[in-house]
Image (cartoon, rainbow, N blue to C red; front, side, top):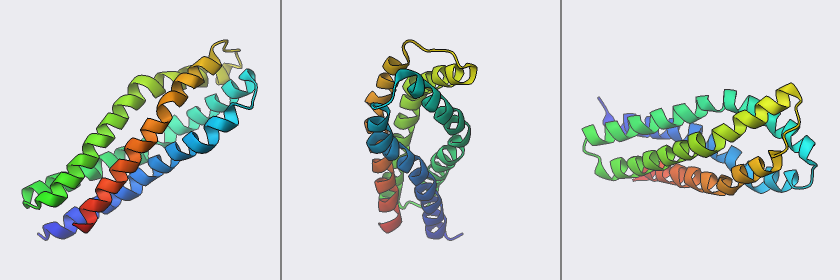
Length: 158
């Protein structure tokens, strides 16, 4: 088996899948967050509830693929003793796991509340506060994803 090709293929798949999530988080941080500051509370809840409805259904696929492909790159690099690639891919894996922990503990619960309110059309008196809590970690989430993409690219070039 050609381990070098296996490592690079897994890392390439990981870069492409992770880049989807990275791009989404960057868009949210630099475009969506300031745009939402200019809308009223009811519109914010309606729009973000719908965004999260679709995002939470569709974004797990590239996110999971990115994590699995990163883990595969780590495994293949370790088995074949390609230590530079193993370290780069393992760094990316740690960053992605920190990201998923932040998402699961902070973002996902907020997403569910906004989605529920949007689907029922109910007013959510604390909708702006919830969005503020979501916004406060989107920059960190984007940075973690960006660093993971960079680490995966390092795994491709070392």
